[in-house]
Length: 605
Image 1 (cartoon, one colour):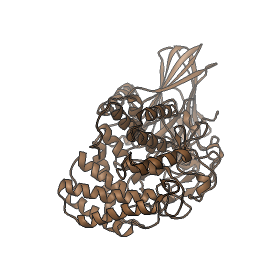
Image 2: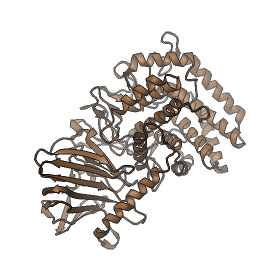
Image 3: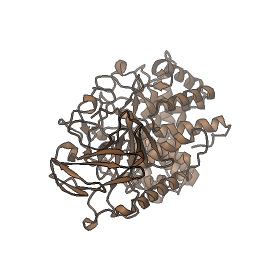
Image 4: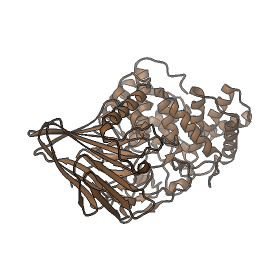
């Protein structure tokens, strides 16, 4: 097998689970049956023992093209050679029946010539730690994991299957216009097989689902294709069952090759989810907002260890996300440890209260009014925050080098009280408004007094330091400071001098600050790069903003997808694809497009 870099993958999914499909026709990563379930295929993290599901044409001098069927999450991989052309169509059906199991449908078709294929299905259950037995008939293979926590799976095929140890393979040849279909499924009702004869109908149903959803987008401006792809990706990351959103479908993809910054992102961060709502609202999608607010209401009534809210949750709202190392896996390009779970769920990150309150404010502005019980929960959360906003915390970057008083956390505490005041006045809601205003103003004074460095002429990362942090780019975007205020413009210049390389932005100076307590460096943080573009646009430098934005679009992979970070050579790093990056792209694109068109944005938020 040939190693595939992160950027060589597309994704398919059904809002329950997601698979990564390489340009070589191999599914190298799949958690099943849910986003955060154990892996069935994980050769992305261990090429030898992780497991894969590959369909490979036997063509000499083959060229490969991969694309999405426009306005859908259906992936097409095209193999081209002198002796023949073949296409592989991958999708996960969007079913209407609640009892329907998750399925991956793979249809291979020959366009021209006669093409031979090899199919290998090599499941490795429970993060490649569990053995399994296999039962094979002519057109069906059943996999039974030894671990009861993993559901059995079945591979149905229109081509003959042969056992290969505990795996399954198939060798077949197709002529022009002939197809072969493979369906990988969980347990079906009463053991019934999939309706292979109606695969075309299920394909059309899935096409209609995605096209109907994206047609609701109100964005008709420049960069429409990239914005639509980002929106379709965000929709894939939203749990159809719970309304929550995962940060990324993968775990332990490194922020530096060979390094230890390898985290599990298959959970719901309040920060990422609320920013996603902001991006989707800008495009006109309100149904997702209402579903998430419904999920968030359940969290407001919880009590977390460090305060009324946790940093992150499981998609179903569970609180405990213990972090473990999978020592038997070699890691992506030998980047270890391979981690599942995330210990950051136990951290104190005060900024989440601002993001939570901002999402509630936006949901009320563009959706249904908040309920009386919901408003009582908000007041309870703000009462706690009023007593705790001065505390040191681990901040937006989830540092593991000790708590500090971070600028971004302080700004978002200001946002929490500011949005509560706005909402109360807009909806005539009762509450301790004078107290909230006093706290909001006290936080604002604290920021201008204790986080401004006269020598640097910039707002600094944390109190008592002279370090800079790209999270400051959110200050004007959150309406804390005017985007043309002299103090902000000088901060922007300082960030450009220290953290910006052309259109790529680092979060902070890792080697200098040692704030995160971890060795090794990291790449440029792609979401910060889009924030930088939006800040330039908000400051009125539209020509520069447009140039850098369009250059930044060139760093996407061949399908328009982004990982968390970019290396100095443009290599994709970190978990992939990442919601935070794509929502930042949408925010920058929509604001910049409005500004270039001369539309007034002042009423937003």
